[in-house]
Image: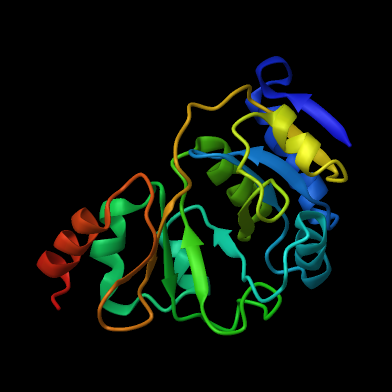
Length: 208
């Protein structure tokens, strides 16, 4: 594994290296706005399967993806009349599960798609550089705590191809997860943004 200290190498060089690894089907440990994550090209089945293997994650526990903006999200998710609502919370520490388009490969999720647009600039620029979504899952073995330092992530996932080290991240819960595949939003996991706040905005902009 190659480890790059982003503070020494620079943001642009780090993003370029990460994009090159992802284009070759590799897996990258990267900092997000919550915890360190594990990225692969979300349209590359072999790369996505490698993420499951490195995490020792059952394929029945589907992956989410990170995109750069709402327009890119539309490639992978059926958003319809939810754009204004989603734009209130994205970019931000919320994952929304939505009906998927044909761009979402079954290795990611055969039924729907979880979408993230992180606040983290480095994540969005990696996605923009690749031109496609990346996997958005914490860089830890299944059932272990999500890592807030690159060192911890490397110990968890020692066989990743590249790690981008931005030091220790401020402690923050993993993203709130909301299922929007039905008419009424459903809380899957409580995170930095409360379900009460999200459902209030949904009621105002979409209706129940």
